[in-house]
Image (cartoon, rainbow, N blue to C red):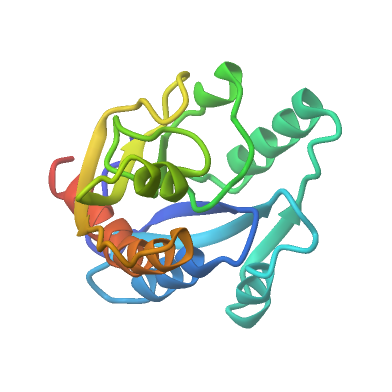
Length: 193
């Protein structure tokens, strides 16, 4: 792992599939002087991903891979990452599961998940949290491993679940915290390198 040194920010790729709100907060974070990362590349699994507008707005190179042929696309993505000397991948609402082969990427892969892992891995987390009448939920930044949402936890943020919360309300509440947590987790990671 390339150590973060002063002005040399670590080249970072962000993978998205949707609105890109975490991408937007990571871009804003990366532009701060104290940030150890620089976002050089955005990968989307959908040409309709709203988050691609941030790539255009902030003049960041972007590529779309539709995963019609997963192995071929992953090989192409890995080649692009190597060519661009990317040392960190931030998954931000990326709705594709990376293969074991991809996870061997020579760098760090982080993900953000909208629950307090190890609870509520996978999809429909907010619905399940409300259904089970949980008092708390939250979000987790973790290393990506071969098992879904099971890598070592970097940082978590707890959010109270109110009786009046719907999955949509809870999702909005947690998303606000995600935007704060992801940069904090990256700072924590680099403090420990």
